Length: 134
Image (cartoon, rainbow, N blue to C red; front, top):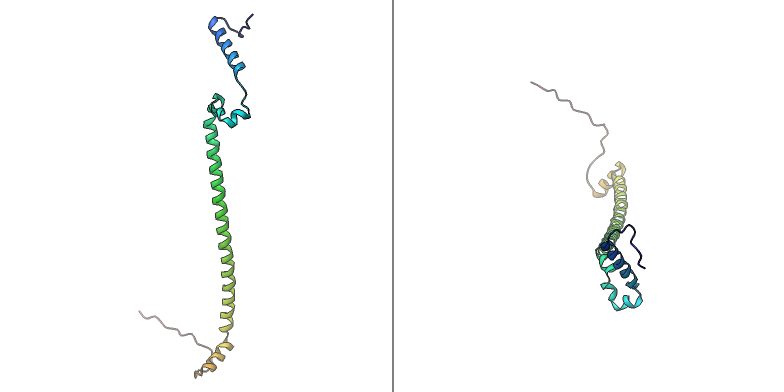
């Protein structure tokens, strides 16, 4: 006695249903032997998934490339930050030295050491006013 396809009204549908049942019975599960032997690559179930596997591999390569690029960028940022800290410290040191050297008492000492005949002004400077003429 044959099993009838659900809702099958004619012989063609019954035949197709029987063929699908035979194909399902004859399929072998992919085992370790077929995987190691390479026959798994010829299986229809695997070949249908090849585009998806290729897409996943492509995304994996993009992910690895992006990670390497970001790590390289982070290392460059750290190097620039270190050099920035060094330059900032040097700038602070030089500005402190400049402020120290530009004090009036230090200027007078350097003038005396150089032997230049300059005297410190006694009178404060005056502002000159010029009238505009038309």
